[in-house]
Structure formats: structure tokens, C-alpha cells
Image: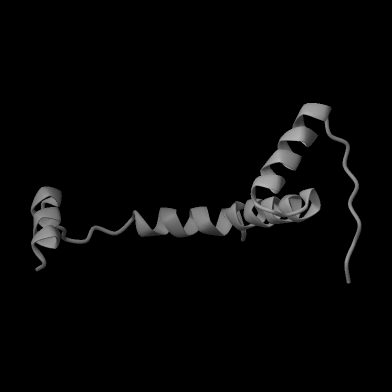
Length: 79
């Protein structure tokens, strides 16, 4: 089901949205919906506490690793 959202913009912001939409041959409404979808994809999802706990647990381990410059060189050479 679709929901209606009404927002109030300053004239300059509205004009910028209209211009961006025109450049892409779309309506301002389509452009705003796309911008909102993009912003939502960029928004972190999930419980930040769980993510931090996983990172804290991971740094407790000590795994062997090589010299970063050597590893990058090997990657570049196709090894």
C-alpha cells in the first residue's frame, strides 16, 4: 500500500530538485522518490550494538598476517 508524504521545501531547494529531475527527463516526484530510496540504501541497517560486539570480539584474536606491502605486491602480480 502506498502512503502519501508531504514536505515543505524552501524555494531554492525545490528549484534545484526540479532542475535535477528535468535533466533526467523525470518528474520532481520521481526524482525525490529515487533520492529517498538511495538514501535509505545508504542508511545503516541492523543493530549497531551487535555490530560493535562482533568487531570487539574479532579484535581479540591474533591471526598471522604478512607484510602489507608484500601482500599488495603479490595481489598486483596476480599470485
